[in-house]
Length: 114
Image 1 (cartoon, one colour):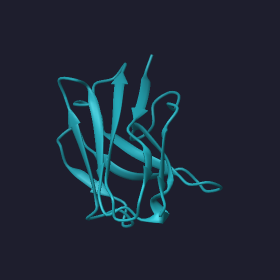
Image 2 (spheres, helix red, strand yellow):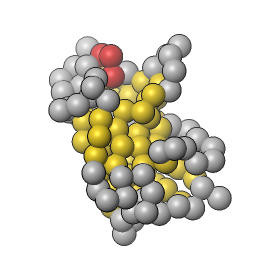
Image 3 (tube, one colour):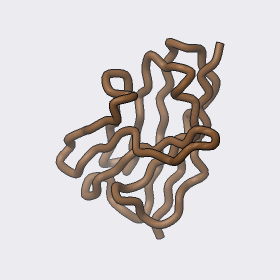
């Protein structure tokens, strides 16, 4: 059974930083393309960042240059370093495969506000 447990969200001021973590079980992060998705209130859940099995990364234009996705193969975890945060980054953040596997985790809320 594939499971994702996200953590690390919180309230941060514009320009601040946060690091999100995702514990993955049931699939190996080293052998699957993995991603961070986000869903703002009333909007569709969209892929924000992805990392391939080969370690290549790609980002939505809205986060490019500010966010960085990484992984720890030994711990089977995915991370998202978010810098220069903006109010429009406010959303619930989820990790999953690309394409997605099984059920979504509970997500972690990120709120960017002064």
